[in-house]
Amino acid sequence: MEQEPVLQIFITACFYFSALPCFPKVINQIPLAALAALLVITGYRLASPHEFMSVYREGKDQFIVFVSTIFGVLATDLLKGFLNLGNLGVRIVIHFIREAPSLD
Image 1 (cartoon, one colour):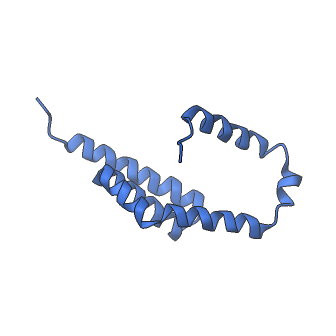
Image 2: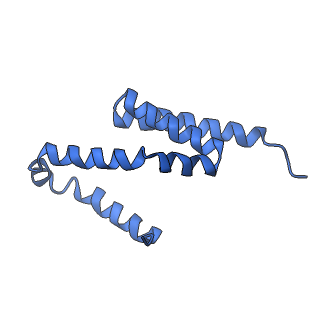
Image 3: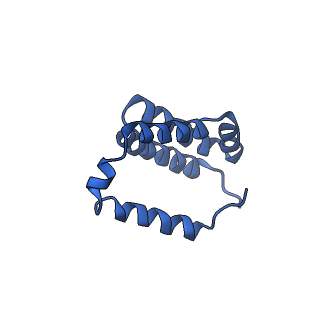
């Protein structure tokens, strides 16, 4: 599977976010079951054991941010969990960076 270029993903995301306020009536006609199915599929892919191992191989700091964000989203709603535990994750990463021994 080829990876999409970062610019293409960014442009697509900008298009989606700019289209949301322009078409509220059309978006409200999408069945909630279809949106729920998309969320379930996305959550399944995010929570696969392969993904956990991949993030763990990147480092403990990345793994802590990843797991804390997932648990925060599950414990609260999506926005609160992402913002609160994403903030916690950033603080943990900054703590690890400050405590890292110098290479001098």
